[in-house]
Image (cartoon, rainbow, N blue to C red; front, side):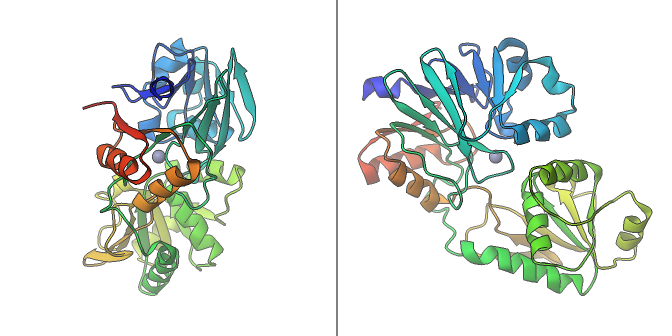
Length: 336
Ligand SMILES: [Zn+2]
């Protein structure tokens, strides 16, 4: 057991170290290969250093395309980036690495490293249990965002329909602004498009480019209008029915006085909550809730678990719960 637990760790800078060769989601100078599981900022830590120093930086093609849009096309060219597709194997000395899909944002990957002893070291990354394949593991590194038993969403299945009907209802009275993070905004756009919600979609330039990349990788949104276009400006100025999609960071700058919907995972009491006049929070998350995290561990059957205590969440609580429920070694790393 002691030996197994040495095969993965998490550093004080947030790097998830797997086997002898791989550092995921933050820079670490002891490993030749850097992995980026997805394009969110808390998983691209120290990427500039990794590009300069590591032999190779691995990510899916979709993640690469998203980072190109978010950081500019020159950024990744400062190092050697290899796009590794889901299910393909890359061998390095006596270890091999494979990516598997993670239901989180476009391009998100789980990482499986198998070493010379056949030990399966799995890092799930960020994920939602719904459409994430569960990998058998010996050593499992798992996120802990909603790792407390207080973080359960019993209403999960109704959230999408609620969001659609809320937006449709509010469109009868004028423009609707939807605020969320990159990736989740595109999920909402696709959801409303598939539900045939009849209103133009308006997006600022950054969201437009990220959406174009998402379309190249199979997502569908219908026609998008740039918020700078005359037609879009007129719609918003006149408070005509249209849906504007903005990053959460823009919420204090745009859409004042209009109907505003925030999509957020940090909601457990109700799938939809009115927080102020014309302002709503919808509990749409791209992370598993507590039950989803426990479910992954149960089905993955690890002998040792490490919970991510670097990123936001409840790593220590989750480690205790895993140990209590399954009687296996579980530790929150890095130690605080
Ligand atoms: Zn993420």
